[in-house]
Image 1 (spheres, rainbow, N blue to C red):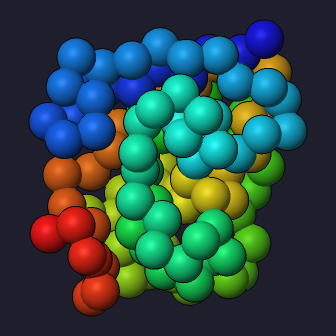
Image 2: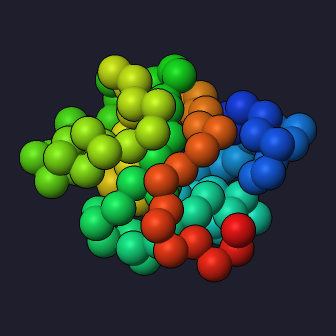
Length: 112
């Protein structure tokens, strides 16, 4: 079973985390299942950028993003070449190292 290594993030996982993921599961679903509350304002429908993550290792093991995801990513804060929406990034058989950006663009966040 592949692992997702989350780098430390002050709000979501201050110590970082190593979690198990099932192939075919999205990075977001694996994170949520393990108590890492990555924001997902559009309820995983690829209609916002609040679940934006940067894949630091294992990026090439992910299926390529589609045009809709690419269009959304263009609006993400801190976009990098290995950025993905965690609701769309499906885990394969390779481990991933993931960084959750410091900020998200969320016009309607109720928790802030």
